[in-house]
Image (cartoon, rainbow, N blue to C red; front, top):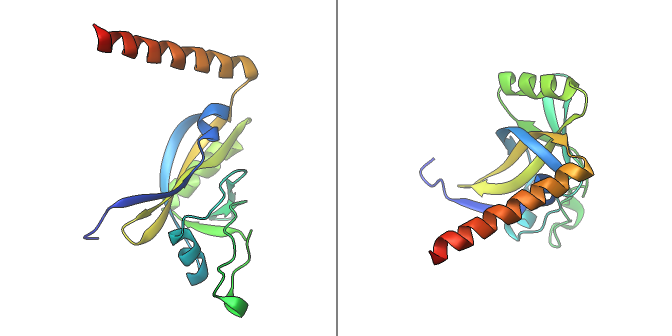
Length: 152
């Protein structure tokens, strides 16, 4: 690809707060034409979306792309499952991670890489409430240290 510019469509910032991310993958997303047109407008909802391995394929479940106003009868279903394009070993690695107790695979962000739609997905383990509080305290402490470093 000659033009590898990245344009972020949507990002799920809540994932980094609720989960501890481990392995990340870049996956292509199989879409129909009206879905791509809506994504070019920047309309997409990633909240509640996750990845499930069915057979030898990875599927993106729960991502909502609204209907395209000008497609009429050729429009797509809003909340259909979309196939992810990954290498076989990556699908096996995700499947192995999902079989572990307490692990899920979530979508971190959706973006255009050149003219292709890509999804950044990650294996994640849920955080407890006290872990979330500790993460916030550490983040605030790091921010304070950076601020003090700037003034000195």
